[in-house]
Amino acid sequence: MAVGVWTPSEGPGRPLGRSFAEADQVMGPLTIRRSFDSSLPVDFAGSAASGDAASGVRSFVSWKPPGGDHRGAAAGRYDRQIVAWARSVPSTGVFATAFHEPENDMTAAEFVAFHRHVHTVVEEANATIRWGPVYMAYWWDPTAPDHYVGDPAAWWPGEEYADFVGLDWYGVDPEPMTASASFRHWYGVMEPTGLPLLIVEYGQYALRPGETSRPAREAARAAAIRQDAAWIAEHPRITMWMYWQGPGPRGSWALTDDASRQAWRDVAARGCRP
Image (cartoon, rainbow, N blue to C red):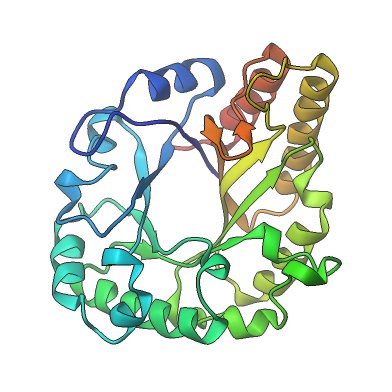
């Protein structure tokens, strides 16, 4: 299993900054890094992932079509730009997605049309890119009907249009992901696809601005990571796990206490491979 993180970067076209080096030192060894471009990069060298290879890590990249225009992308409006980007991506097995967490921004039918078209264009331009959808766990809890996807099958583009299936999952108050209704439902729907299952954003315990960290919650976070690690070890279809080592809208998810960092170091030591 590949183990990695997202950390704040120093911008497109620059080597990885101090934040990733520090994360690798305190919670590594880390072999893969998540990065984001708010719009389709002109090429890989100018993208947020450009410094990954020189730093010895693999890339998991996310971007959106210009202006977030998923309908135009599905209709082929940006095919030329997508082909140019894909051809510039190094043939090192880069993982990629476009419009992660689509449940926030479009209907199931719109997402399937968008994903199928972009996957086809990317695959024809550079078959070494590993392409797949990344869903948002918040929408996959069937016990919460006010924010449930409804028919999960309607959001699935089909195995021929995916090399993996990803999930973003967060627990504001620390709890084992693998015991949550959202994760269990997503896993139950996607496991039969036969594809690798990836946890590409994972956060436990958001420390809100101005709040003092609570040792009891830090201990619960470390315990949740260890419980999730034990479950994942028994379910080898999960082949990637990345922590969100930084801020977000709900606060900071960074692992700053020794127990949580050690829990992640143990995951990395067992899971990483060259």
